[in-house]
Amino acid sequence: MFRALLLTALLGLGTCQGAKAPEVPLSGPEKIEADRRACERRGGNFAPGGRSQSLYCFTVPKDAGRQCTKSTQCDSACLAFGTCAPVKPLLGCHDIRNAAGVIVTQCID
Image (tube, rainbow, N blue to C red; front, side, top):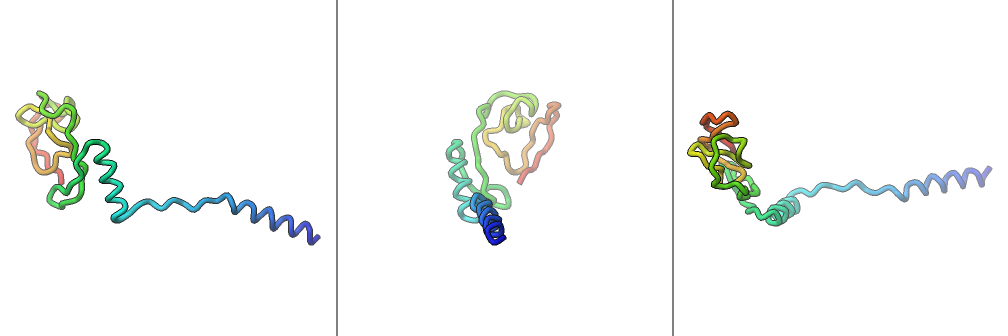
């Protein structure tokens, strides 16, 4: 009986050894630094922006400055005067052309 109880206890302990502690997501300064490095690897500029001055990864879209008549022709936004936006995300209030080509004001912060 003692051997059976001992064997059961040892088998139970053996199953605990393979369990890994869950990964804790980065936060605070470590998260900001990881986000900055990831942004720079993509060729972006990690900087504060908008009214809140939150940190964003600003990138130049491949189609920046290209002629457009509606938003679906651009990676970022089609500006009202007919060119694709020079930066992504496009923060602030801007007159843009929507998917139908209609000029609307878009505000993003």
